[in-house]
Image: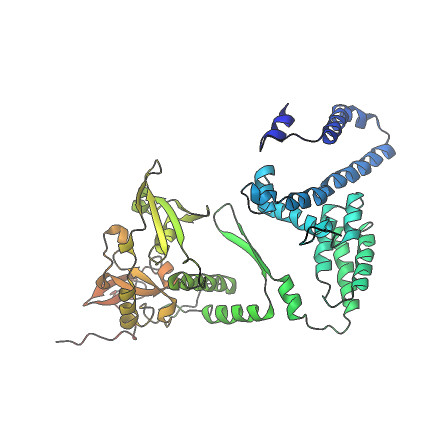
Length: 441
């Protein structure tokens, strides 16, 4: 009964009679499996293990036929999910990674359809045949797809087919890692001179994936072309240089942490300029939090994509243009949305650039383009979005000045910074030397 409800849950469809017969046979086998296993001799128990694994693999390989049929019918789009991985996540409660892996395998070893509707053979027919026979596992398929994708695009078709055959045969007797090792040696044999990958190969392999962790942080993998990588390295290298503290102490961040902070700086700049989607909609980050969270500064806010952010981090982000904050009460009723006076106007920003000439924190050399607008008296505490209450601060000092014991004050329209007592027991205010001094008298 439970199985029937589960199968009919999504759209009221029913399974084929063939699958129904198979399910009945499996249920009959499962009902007596425990007693059957206990009575089998050792050799027969091992044989049972092997046969069950072959069956498990063959059933998994049915995805290579079923998913292309979903694509041929355009069901993911028609049902409102857009892509097959998203459809699989909804229908089968799969993780995004597992849904993507199944789709990728089906695209590579399953049947294909041409632009005019004609049937096309699989990209990797030998791999698909071995998977359908239960001779290799899903992990083998994944390893083979990844290795064969590394074969240079200028290798002749016949040579590529022979490489696929050799690797598929190796997969019948080796674990997935062994297949990958054999594949690397084969590719080295095909390219003994070690030619640099072509731009076409680099673009074929480019990609970036981002996964949200349970704690709200994100992690990912990327592979860029040489030109894109050079741009990224040039930008991040310049932004990730160590920054000594005002008292001369060394930057406590590791290289990886500095690179992560530099990437955040680049994202901050893109959000502020609003020009990263040429001709398209402006970039917006929508953050939702409760009024109590705004008042207490504690808890987690949520982005429109469902990502959790600490309220303090969310409030820092909310200082920036094109970042809309939605404040709700405990029942979710919106109390305020996109309060414009929190964000400095364009003319105010230009005035800040002219006055502060970059990060106003003492000793910092970050230019204005890499700075955020900071309310000296916090906006949530009644601070006004006026020039007399605003200053430019780079992202690192914006994040860290309070925890390091610094305070910012405005004197005669200019920002001054009060160091903690362990730096200066008298706590005499300091100013960044780039800021013009106000003439006395």
